[in-house]
Length: 324
Ligand code: ACO
Image (cartoon, rainbow, N blue to C red; front, top):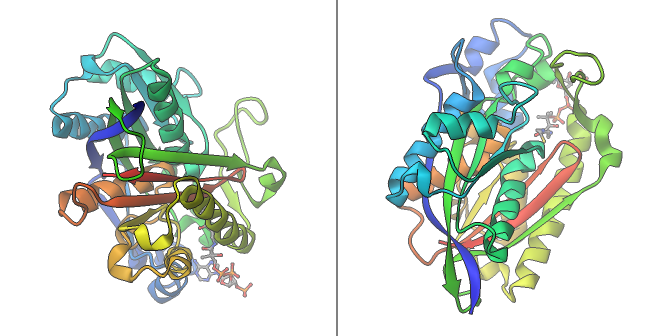
């Protein structure tokens, strides 16, 4: 027997305000047609003034706790994946902790940009496997609208705000790939690619929050290769093949990247969860948002094998396999 992390609940939250491509076309030189054709994005959500990353996260976490039938004080660990924290410090996770009314355990942030949820899941899963935590909240929450250069059409059309969360619970398992829970996580980074995707500010450099800068083609090229490698490693580590996957729940950056991954796995499109059309790229929040959507509309059923993969600034990338 071995310890494993079971997903006991998931929840998500999107800000109320919808921004369509047509609305963006009024302020930058772009069209709905260009955005849809190149990215698959039709609209995104934008956080209201005074609505912070922690506010979105708390709503997602509350929903995840309620699905798990748990209260916040039963949680040992909060890991919040975000690149848009409320403040430079303290960790947004500690703000979430207070707002949830939780006074025990530990809370900290993980910074891996679009791979943040996979990184957060890896951290929490390892805490649970090691026996240092029995329950954990893993949250991906972002307000990317706050770090976009709204004059730069090559980036401002791509991102949105939102949050998603899962509650993990330690269980005894036979350790096989048929048993429920997180089967494996694999995370990687290569800092040499900093210039392809970064924010041009920070507390130690400019003293400002800065704006997102990206070489889209370079990111695209690496995303396809790196995520494919991480998927192969995940399947191999569990003695599984692409044919075993029931659902691909990928990071939602671009429909063309998602379709390339699905083709490589020979997965039909109705086995791929896509939210990028309505959410755009919500960075660390995109995987838990997509996961929750497919769980709540009952596409994902108990026992299904879910593959998650992501890549983001750093570069960072990774994959996770989960038996629901
Ligand atoms: N509207 C109209 N035209 C535009 C826009 C826009 N919003 N943005 C760029 N263009 C123009 C460019 O200026 C360029 O014009 P030019 O040929 O006259 O110079 C032309 O469109 C083509 O630009 P490219 O950047 O080559 O277009 P591409 O087909 O590569 O698509 C995109 C750009 C969508 C950014 C793509 O490269 C991409 O999705 N890359 C992945 C980046 C990504 O998803 N990053 C998210 C973070 S990391 C992650 O999550 C994986």
